Length: 181
Image 1 (tube, rainbow, N blue to C red):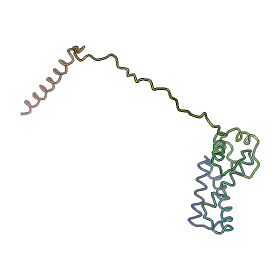
Image 2: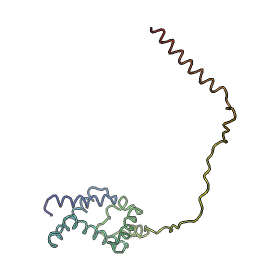
Image 3: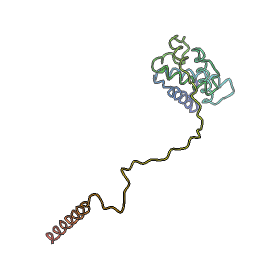
């Protein structure tokens, strides 16, 4: 068991957060996986002459994930970001943290159905985008009809009604003021 200290606590939290980012929610499985990785990282850090705990823990985490993905048929160089992205996508597509959580990154044999689900979920490149030399279409605004400023307004009574409303309001204020004084 590793010695307690803030550096190893930080390493534990980083590994646990990394597995949470892979959508592993089970507290028991998170603790088991993380504890095993921290113990192995502690042994390696002592053998490697004092490697930083977080670095050692993440190195062990990536090695275990690479070994597990290799066993399920997702072979590749785990140091390559594209291989790791394919692996993470395969985990999401196969719903491994939800449906197969007990088999995630474990040393137990992987069921054939899980291996098939993981190998069929891969990241495929999309179409390449090319710039087009097509000119832009002119903008069209959907106004009803053009306004002729020289023609009289369609509703000639609108101004009269607005003026009447304001006069009525002023008359009411004046009456209220006269009654109060």
